[in-house]
Image 1 (cartoon, rainbow, N blue to C red):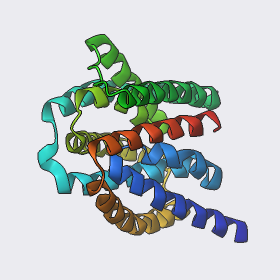
Image 2: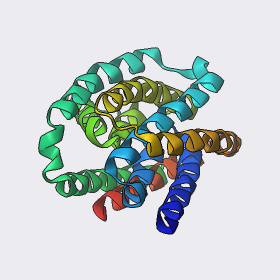
Image 3: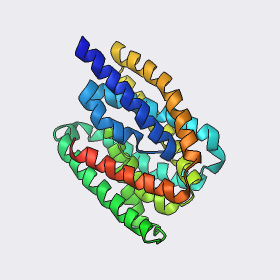
Image 4: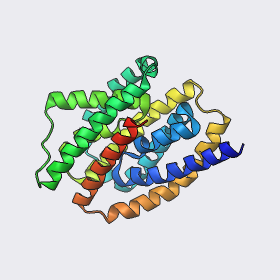
Length: 247
């Protein structure tokens, strides 16, 4: 009883901190929270709760910055990620057989792109826009990973950072993506019965905590310069990758 209460309290702390980050950058909250949450409350409830919170936090971001949404990029991203989501559903059972390998592979890819983009930024070079083939593969992979692990953010960022250099556009557009994709995942979680009584209680408390996280994240985001925003994004990508490697 005591250990369960402590784990729940630690999980809620992780939720608060992760959603501050989610609000600042438009990504990374779930992938940073996922490894710790799985250890604290288990994979299925962690995935279900963090998925709903990711969508809810994104709604808060979009309500305050909907005019910055890049509609053309939003359609492109969803056009490739939605089939990836479907693949994540179809091959989910096979990935369950060796999720550690998938986590480590994803972590290595994320770290590579984070370090590569960070070095280019520090050298003062503009990020090159990804080609059509690279873009398609990256977005399909991001959708597949998000469909099963709710961790497609870092891969999506490798595409979006070169396409949307404006930080407000980047943040608002990615938040729209999560609203759509996470809503689909929530219906899937409901279908498989992921929301038992304990999970619903944790979700309710987490949503209350979310309001404070969104407010604080919005205050911090307004004080960041463009370079500071990108540095934070790439550092968080690297941390996300490391957290996946040690998962």
